[in-house]
Image (cartoon, rainbow, N blue to C red; front, side):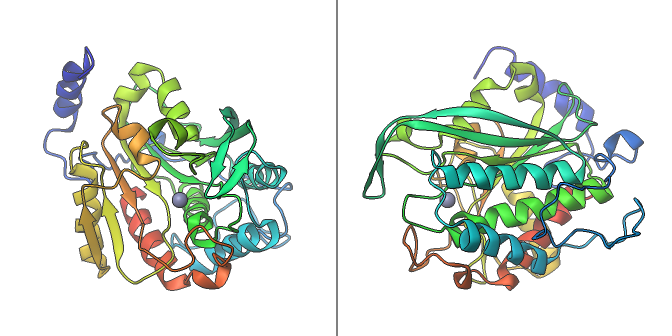
Length: 329
Ligand SMILES: [Zn+2]
């Protein structure tokens, strides 16, 4: 345990005594708790289903409800129009720009964090060294010394896969949650990240999860201590049961809070504590309380057959409704 961590836990515990939120955080009703107000977004791409009709005002016009149809449009764009998005490729850069414009359109402060990726082997395909990027959407009310949450989904794919399920599905849910958070606020300030270079270029920890490892390592220690929960959305669009896991280090507070919420929504879940194969693991190893949603096995994993038809709107809707129930004010 890092020096000072225990004291931080005590301080947070005192602040949160008596609260019952999904990760022990209180729903705050102050103005400071809401995400940035939405604003007109002239840079949003035409594929964005949330684009408002001409004449719309800045007042939210959509109900605070996850839209699986909007999520499917994102899956089709990333896995259909863009296609394979190796972290160091031009296609990845285009996808990152598209996500960046979506976040910006919702009103976030958006930044890119560059990532160096070594040469290696992307699921059987030799690949050169190169650069990738995390795309980070920060709400204007984030105080890095106060409790905040991080929700992430990796945007890259292995070399040959269009990656509809792995992981356009996660990015699709991420973007719809970012929209809802911007329009309707959240219980706790929430940062959304599309991670670069999650997919491995070889065996072992050092050749995997480059984007999230960098992001976790670069967080100032006080901000990392204030990070109340990190959730990775990775492969969330197949099957009818929602896997909710940790890697076995994290306290189970976030995982079990999500499972309890799912029960109330009539959403079936499965639980585990041995999942280390997504971006939550980068934070879990740094003592952040995490959960990973997704990982149901499917036939076209890491192949050219991971196309949009693999993903179902119903499963995106289950994950989206669960996550929005967790995030909402
Ligand atoms: Zn993945």
